Image: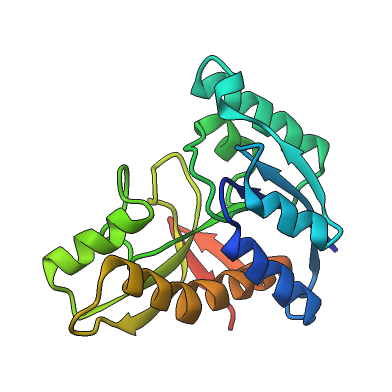
Length: 208
């Protein structure tokens, strides 16, 4: 049974999707053992506590720089014996220390079809604003491995939704969360825990 640690910063809707999937028995071979937040007042912590999951808080501003914060996060993840680290609305970019400690053992969900609308500055509603400004006809979400390159790790799963006339960044964000993110993230976590993802030459191959 693999130990899953989830990193959060805000409301925790993706965390809730993971908790719900776990409660339904859909995450095979692993269990969420700890939720770590970069903010002390993140509602995601309450979601974890309600589910009986251990919580820890590592506040970014308590550390002088990203290197010090990344070192602290790495130490905590090692202490928790994490086999898989899941970014679920975690808004701090960690440096290469963490990626080197957990190579291809960290996954993130990004609310766009990578390589579109990704990288530094593309987060939250900014992603959907950019997609609508470009006039795309479909959008979606990507679950990928976390590497030193922001949103640049091997792609595990992708899913799409239609962009509708009259969409706002908020309506598009909601449709992608409900129809793609909340489904694909638990699925990817389960695939990892079942050892059904392999990485070769920078690409992820999934045994569906």
